[in-house]
Length: 202
Image 1 (cartoon, rainbow, N blue to C red):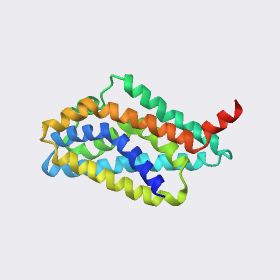
Image 2 (image 1 turned 30 degrees about the vertical axis):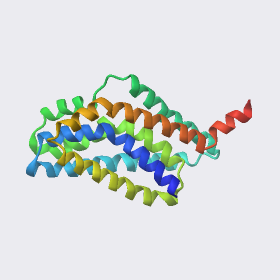
Image 3 (image 1 turned 30 degrees about the horizontal axis):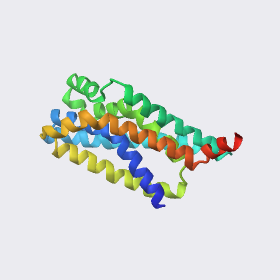
Image 4 (image 1 turned 90 degrees about the vertical axis):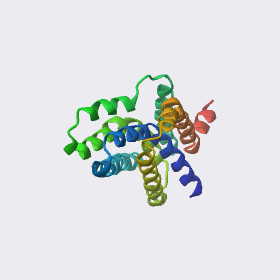
């Protein structure tokens, strides 16, 4: 149980490094009364990503051999390696989209940015993790995700005016996320017995 929660915590923190920068940009543009739909949009967008990942993971659990599920570990490894060599900036992409957004559509815009901008990366992390995690642990993991997401959202809101926060995540956010992706992918390969399966074939 503790191992599953620890892995869940690490994986979720890994997916929120770039999203934290996005939230800083969003809250920088929409404060006061307009910050409320930002909060709501962030929660709903993440809920959609987790729900879809859980559904896909449940379907994949129908595969009889556990080591086959471990092959999903290559997805976050690939995303992590890709992130180390990628020059794409999710924060800049979000800023461009928000600059063209009507303030009345803040909620839907934040949901869209969360799902479209962070969806591929986050689901690449969630699906392998949930597919290799016992269903009995899922409720506790979801509570943990909610706590971490709340900390991320409220931290971004209150730290919006602190330039050092922007500088740190711009310099190290992508690298830290990529390293965590690779580490989780390796863990999935090991925990599902995929590595030992291939070793036994040699």
